[in-house]
Image 1: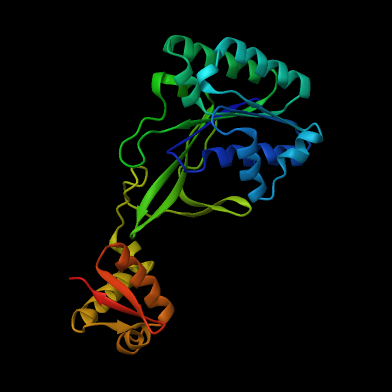
Image 2: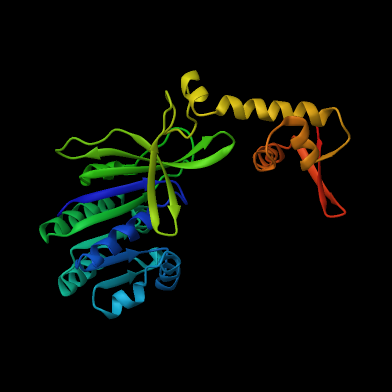
Length: 292
């Protein structure tokens, strides 16, 4: 309680959803909340929340939630900060989400004033006993990145990082706690997924290095233990067979490889995405052909 946490990540990684999850969890515990957004208007946010089973409109009618929305183009930081503090006092809010720092930065050409605004608002919320989540967009989806510009990350007590990860021909999401002020914390980097129930944290990513850049490097033990070598061999076998024929359907391919049709479809989809296999339909049957 009475702390500030930054959730940083690229576009679409789940920052706003994590903030929503935080607000809704508090309301379900009887803690009123305030949502402050600059991009997502109330209708958009309600639609997103409703898809996860969270009825924000009902929470507003119960007096447990207030959604403040201002366009970043029209934002006047000092006036806006006063409005936020007034709303927090009025509803006796215990939790607040500010989404996002990037929008406030864009609306504040004077970057010294921008830092002062964030510092003043976050510390005032702490003094009021409010637990705060602020989101911040990282421009780089992959590769080296900067958590926040102009040194704003020093204002918050905790930092959660969300990143895209390229893994075996797919894009996944990773989460890591980068900072917890004054307390020990897990250093694990874990997969997470967005489900119909919200955010679900999954297993630790067993990579040697490179996870937070989006391009993890795995050791041979991990590859063998998790079946990646087998998957690669499946792809090689499929390609060798398809290269020796004009075309082949899934049943013929299953007979030739000994793999189940379900496993083959999974591998063939990966090969199609890499441009190594093409398909066409004939008489309600899908045929596959190697392109190389």
